[in-house]
Length: 440
Image 1 (spheres, rainbow, N blue to C red):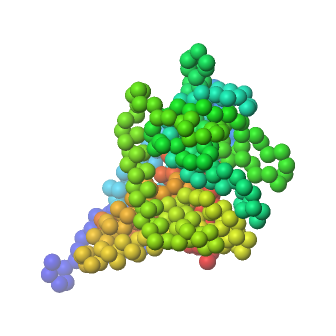
Image 2 (image 1 turned 90 degrees about the vertical axis):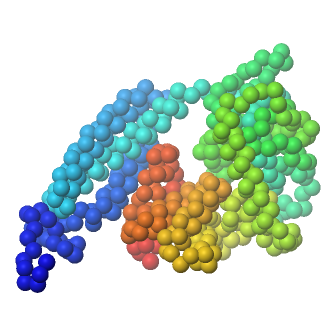
Image 3 (image 1 turned 45 degrees about the horizontal axis):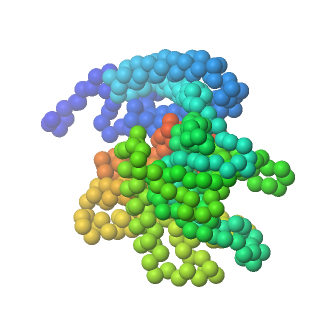
């Protein structure tokens, strides 16, 4: 175009380089996306929390929850269709008016609230459809066959100052799932929810088995009782959130044997679990290579807790000491740990290439590896998801909004587990990040 010629635009075309408000009160469609993502995340959390706090979210109200889930999901679909229609109409003009943006935001919020409630009710229905695991009476000696879900690790008996003066045998604790109780005649009973967990404690030495192995053992069954005193830990509630329905005490590792004659129904998942546990074992061995095992310093427990999120023997004592001075958050896996990992990976990537996209891809791969290897705590999952989303935007050369990245992580976690909306770990993790972003 020669100088002096006027450039003509259509009635809905934006002016070149103009990302702000237009004279007719319209705004750029691209600038609305981060706010829409945040509204959707807030609405999804609100819907999951409201449904979780209602009486229909209980398993005993599963019949009502089924109808509520259908109604909420249908309402969410209707609002989604309306929001998509408005978005398509605005995309043809590349701008959206303020009134249209407000209407679209309301539709997106209603869609998210209905979707969150529907997912939470559907989760209740699925839990009600699963058969219950019938745990035998307290103190009964039982023969059990199950699959190892978490490896056996050494655990202490107490964390107070007098615990080290008590002479107790070494205890190793693991988790098993897909539990079957076998009676004296060989009958198999109690076949229930395959995801229900039993905590198994073995004395003296860990049993010779690994993750995803099918094992048979004999032990004393114990129920998880509710707290009897106000100061007692709410172990029953804590165990219920983890899916643990009882515990078994095995006196000797010789009573645990690997069952080889059964064929697994989930070979792919078992292979992945074995691969993950082998990788975690190698990372742990590399971390503790050359580290002193002096109990006075307990550096080993701190390293494993900071990198893998595992609470080893001796970690509880350190955690209590840090909590006494108000620094217990330092030991939790959070964004700081992922930031250090990203800095190390980015520094290594700079020695290979000067392209920023290569650095972003390397950081995203490292965050994905951390997400797979770390213990599934809410703060760890949130940090890893945020790092992956941010790295993906950097690899594609796109700008990213911090609040929108946090919203995407929240949406992914709530869709995977709607019941986490009322969890203290989920709420504190996201509330702290928002406070650091906007209040500090």
